Structure formats: structure tokens, C-alpha cells
Picture 1 (cartoon, rainbow, N blue to C red):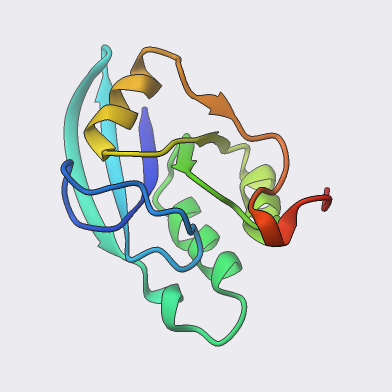
Picture 2: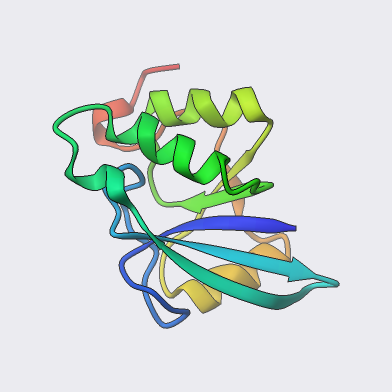
Amino acid sequence: MRIAISSTGKDFESEVDARFGRCNYFLIVEIENEKVKGIKAIENTAKAQMGGAGITAGEIVANKKVDAVITANLGPKAFSIFGQFGIKIYQGQGKIKDVVQDFIDCKLKEIKNATGPQHIGLK
């Protein structure tokens, strides 16, 4: 399984970024038999866009053939992109290494709608 995590930095000691479309990096984590097999940091080139960062960031992640995304907040446009590709979305906060373990242990809540203060009430 391959997951993408919105991250403030390039490694497992980084924090989950509260923003998806404007996070600094995406960490692509390979999980096999409930163990981390690899990690790769990808710079989020969408973060500097004037508009549409969520769409572009969603496309960047979807093109990495991930099965799931972990983030703190997600706007409606990125949420829609993941729905089109059948990518599940989970909410996580804190250190990446802890959030990945929570994912492996099935402790993360699946996001069913766009989140964040600017997206509350949107479906």
C-alpha cells in the first residue's frame, strides 16, 4: 500500500501539515505487511499557485498511484479529485512517524467531506 501525507518537512520527524494544497511536502510512504518499506519526499509545487492549489496538489498525489492520503484538512476540490480516483482520505495530526503507525493500526478517522474552517458546510 502506498500513502501520501501532507508534511511540513522531508522526513518521519516532520509534522503533518494542517494544509493539504499548500503544504511544503508530500511524503509518499510504502507499507507492506504492516511495516514501512520506504519513504520519499516530494516538494509540493502547487503551494505557490495563486489559485487552484488544492486541485494541482491532488493531481500530484493521485499521479503517484497512492491508495490513501493523510492530512489534517482538505478542501472540496482536492476531495473531489481523490473521489474520482478512489483514493481514501484520513485525518491525522502530529509527527509523521506516529500518524503512520496510527494508520497501520487502523486508528485514523476517514474523512468523508471537505474539512477546515473555510470548507465547513460544503459537501
